Length: 198
Length: 318
Image (cartoon, rainbow over all chains, first blue to last red; front, top):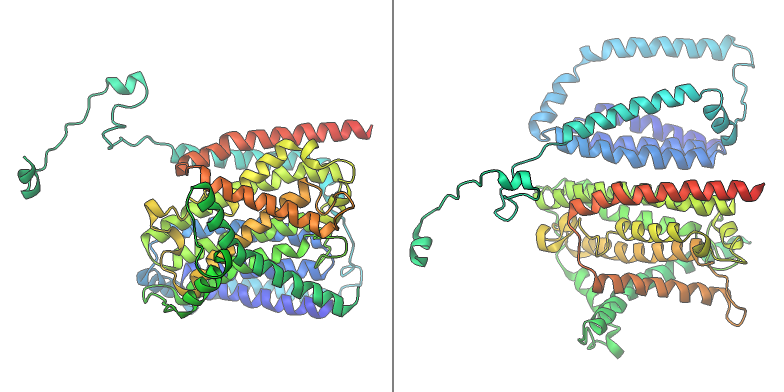
């Protein structure tokens, strides 16, 4: 199984690097999906099929929402790609690379000087995770729930606005209040066709 | 099971599935014609069976055109995803005792994972076409399928609670005495509705809606790439029917005078016929109606079903 693990790890790293370096947001998102699939494969090769399936359902399945955001929010095209290209100058890489180097140094330190205890594999089955989430850490779970709820309410509030209806059938509205509102004046367009009709 | 047997099963399942999906094109057109009081395709071969062959040949000889304004690789990738993800889902379905490609412990989750990957084909196909109707279809398809995927997953959890397993073989075995459609009627109805929405079949074929979106996400596709979307739809119907049979109607279980595989196929074709009858008889709802129906009604019902099933399961356990 360790061959599978290493192959999928390499795929994960390569696709994640591609996510960062693509100039086109949609291509970057596709690589992100590949990266999640390979992480799912890593879990599967380590003998955790349940987590692997959840990884794909929750992450790879939900990235599609991000995809829609990209389509809706960004003006894709040559200019965006150009802008991305300008943002990804070598200068930008300095701070993240330095931070990652710190982490790399830490990892190497642990690998070479740390005792075996650090690298010990301990198995935690999903049942235990679920019990500790809903027992010991229930307050944290509920707080996260509040946070998500706030997000949903905010989104619903932003998204909810009544557009004036332009269709002549719907213009008078459904409720009494809307019916009382004045009907928009119909503009009569006259051209050769209407003249012919008249 | 030896390696050769395993390979035989894989090849056999693949062969039968692709033939069923192709044959369904003829079955659907003949059945629709029957219900609409006309003849349907009846020229090529006996009863017009060879219409599928003629269609396939035509698709192969058509110009396989990629629009110059499209995103070429994503455009090519999209139809492959739909067929790939649906065919992969069949891996976990037990057709008869011993005839299953991979008896996974996480069977239902695997099915849900593959159906959530299936959304990519619509969105990528619609986006890569670089056509506003295709993009509208893709956005509709994405929100419809993401929403109904949630209900689909939740409606299956009642079955999982009652059988105590994600493994489809175990779920079939748990229905030895009583089919789950009796104990989980609400779950069945919601799974059926969500299944139609997931395969975006009429009446829920809002992503393609030919009368308003000129075929939606696959408007720019031609030749065999369009054929892939087409065959993917029929594979999707077969998949959802097979899942309904396995989860709610006892899979291959049945009286002993017919072999298990025959029972499975009979039940499978009953539900495929039901899918086609729905297409023949129901009008398409408006897009916002579909979404608000999902989130305001189905979500509430499916959560209530989950709560009540959980309570009864706990009570029965003591």
